[in-house]
Length: 485
Image (cartoon, rainbow, N blue to C red; front, side, top):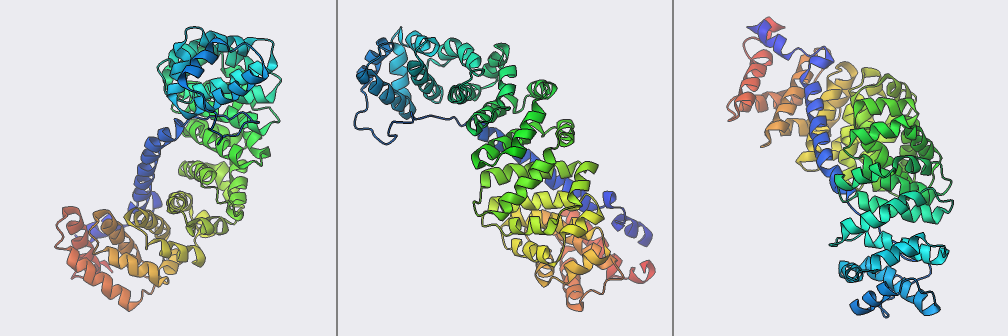
């Protein structure tokens, strides 16, 4: 019986221990939440304001009747008409009722398309701004606008004018945000090749708009991702990220890469193209800057966490050359709880790669930060316990360092009496690893408190906790202790 119990708790092989299963379980839960959250992020749309107009100037806002009248007279050019164009652009940005009023006029849409495709560059630019804002709101003429405008917008992606490329890509991104049906239509109309070419642009605004559009086409669509990668677009995106220094552009590129690399095969492919060099570089830059760019940080952390989860040798080689504790600690100390939770998830995956990598992460300073994180709510506490259990599974000096951190030890013992069964089970597992290591001289008070807490758990209402606690108590504190030792 003693041998059976001892075998149950034997965790010398990392992949057989419960902390590994907890880490994987935690990762799966995190990834599941990211899958549901990621699509919420996709469907926001963009608007544009004409550069020379005042966005806050609503004194001359057109009436709905003015909107209809202007729709009939769009192709007439005069100073007064130009002012009306600017008000029209603002009106479309403001409310869908203006868009519906404009499109109720039978000729308005075709007049707008005529301006878009005509020879007058000024009218063409006005039309592009209008179409961006028309596609940014919900209205009853969506399909008609897409059918009339999208072929021309795709054609103008190959324009030599960066502003036109930016506006057309933004409008197409808005269209793609409306669902798979529109994404498929855009692909049939030939959007892939000119879109890929935009990532070669020297204009940050064009690259940002291209990423905005590509993100909406690729998310959740492996067929589109495969087509992009087959065209060599993956390398273009990675190259653009390596060169980029504009925060908003970096964020769009990072999120695009996150969605493309969510599949393990695509992750490995992008890593071979140099993606992790760019990710780690920007992570360090964001970490050392005062900008606190949560948007970009989140994307980079998720890429790194997913890459660490597959334990790719290429990533291990790159991580081995970094000061990982200096990278992770400031993120654990962030004022943004969201960033703290993301970092904990990433940390548990990184230290799970192997013992050498874990030793680069888990120094006294990082353990102090983990201890502070235990003062957050349950969700953060669970992530911290996964980190602690994964670290403790390596035994030896890792366990000794944790045992010497009074804040962590006090919380781990406290969790043995917690109402959350997941926290209780993780604390039981950590306690077992600490008790099992004979070469670690556990502080007598810690040992005594663990014993008392485990003894109480023998009467727990949860059957799994009750059984596990009973076996652990018998093994280390009961009559079997001498025979097992």
